[in-house]
Amino acid sequence: GKTAPCWNNKLQDAKGVESARFCFADLNPAAPEEPACISGFAGWFSTDFRVGDGEVVTLDTSPHSVQTHWGQQVFYLPRPAVVPQGHHISGELDMVRQRENKRLYNIGVRFTVSAEADAKPSMKPIVWELP
Image 1: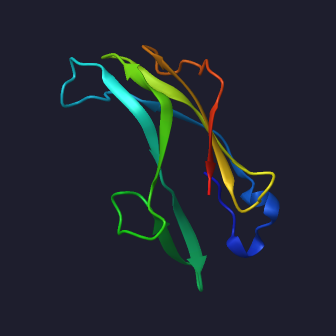
Image 2: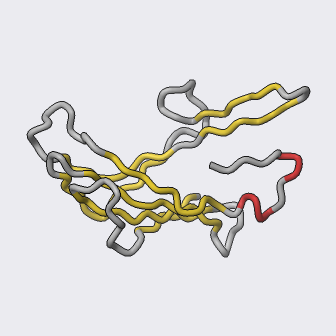
């Protein structure tokens, strides 16, 4: 995660998120003997704002929090990924500002399906443009 006081931020601070690693396992708990079919990833954010005398106000857009106009985002895969029992889906996520419009971001994801949790992503990134 990134931490910076908002009254001190420069454009460089909002450039994006550098290569965040992820790993998901036990993807089909309702039928653990069956492979999981992953059609996409869901994303949201949570951020803390320090206000006044140090009070912290949290903006959380997760599905477990109070609904906001921000909501969540679904990133559909070009084709579903099948994850056999005992395997993981792991990889890296990047979020970078678009060159054409600095208010917009591109999300890039590289992932692999493997029996090893720390397997390196082996594919070129899938990139989504966020409006």
